[in-house]
Length: 206
Image 1 (tube, rainbow, N blue to C red):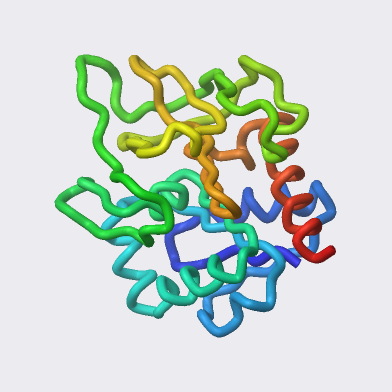
Image 2: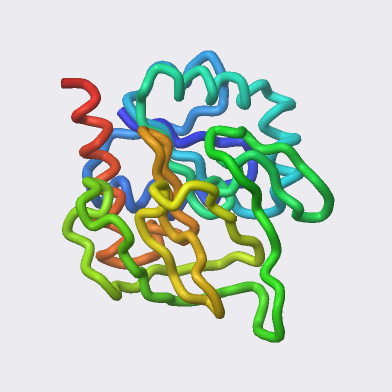
């Protein structure tokens, strides 16, 4: 069973539809004490980093998520949810994140369109990782973001995309994984990535 964390800032409908397409059992979860009921967690997010962390802390989900990760079960952050996995963000001030991955979230700088919105190609950095199994170099995913993650350890990068410079698209350290794009809106590529995550959750039960 997959738990979709609801803290009031996620696009849950399209994510649920994607899991239904995969015929994956899932539930919406917002109570910290219930996180341990699931073999894997999805942390979606749309909006501002600081607001999201305030809501998460207000309902004590931050500590519950950290405790869940210590059980060595998978968690996947999507879009803002990926950024929340990191140590800090400069979005509208300085804000502390969940600190499950090192480094910070920064704003795009340059004379180009911000936010980065639309379909962009994935450049695979670690083709052997089970999360990107079956994904081909140059496949497209759907991005919507004005901030991006500075990754501290290059071994954490599974894929990047080019938006005037390399941008972390998929990151992973142990069972902590993030996708800057929306897999649930990224067609067959996104469905394949979600299926790979679900398989990772199943393997953790065996």
